[in-house]
Amino acid sequence: DAGVIQSPRHEVTEMGQEVTLRCKPISGHDYLFWYRQTMMRGLELLIYFNNNVPIDDSGMPEDRFSAKMPNASFSTLKIQPSEPRDSAVYFCASTPIGGELFFGEGSRLTVL
Amino acid sequence: SQQGEEDPQALSIQEGENATMNCSYKTSINNLQWYRQNSGRGLVHLILIRSNEREKHSGRLRVTLDTSKKSSSLLITASRAADTASYFCATDGTGTYKYIFGTGTRLKVLA
Image 1 (tube, rainbow over the protein chains, first blue to last red):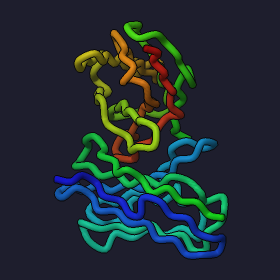
Image 2 (tube, helix red, strand yellow; image 1 turned 90 degrees about the vertical axis):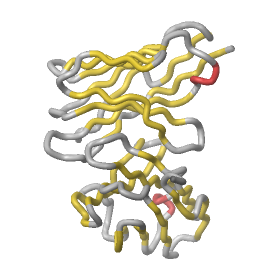
Image 3 (spheres, rainbow over the protein chains, first blue to last red; image 1 turned 30 degrees about the horizontal axis):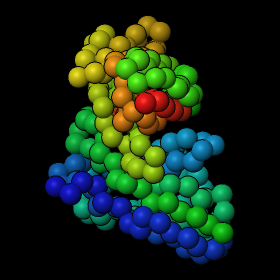
């Protein structure tokens, strides 16, 4: 298996633009997580899904953030409109039930 | 917040020495995991210890867990320059798979 695949790896955009980050989890993993990493706040859990259903989105910072998982092999994290304070590395991770998390390489977002 | 705290925040040692990192957390857990992150990369799982276990070994890694103190430690023995990375603990909550990460320890091993 190729592991968790995230795209794009790097994104530079201007304030106010819509940003869509994508994630393909490992086949057979029932759980998918979105994290955000910054120097100031560390690794923050934004939302996680079980069998494509959002279980806990209490970490989503504002209504500007939304996440979907239309099927078992694809998830998106959308920011609309983006702001400079959204600049961070966004990680997707997946896991089979109760096991270790497998992380993607991250999407580094810069909002100017 | 359930987020764990790790100490030290940064650690610099000579190759061959042992490195110890500590993690404290706030709520009851099913298990605790340790991860490693090389600069600019994703996190990689190192070891998982369940709440009913007190110690676990994997190669040069030794993890302890004290649920009464809500703390864990990661010991890396005979460190190598390639061990230079950030190390994070992660805890779930009982009855959930909501994994929360600690603040991390930046380890630098000098050759």
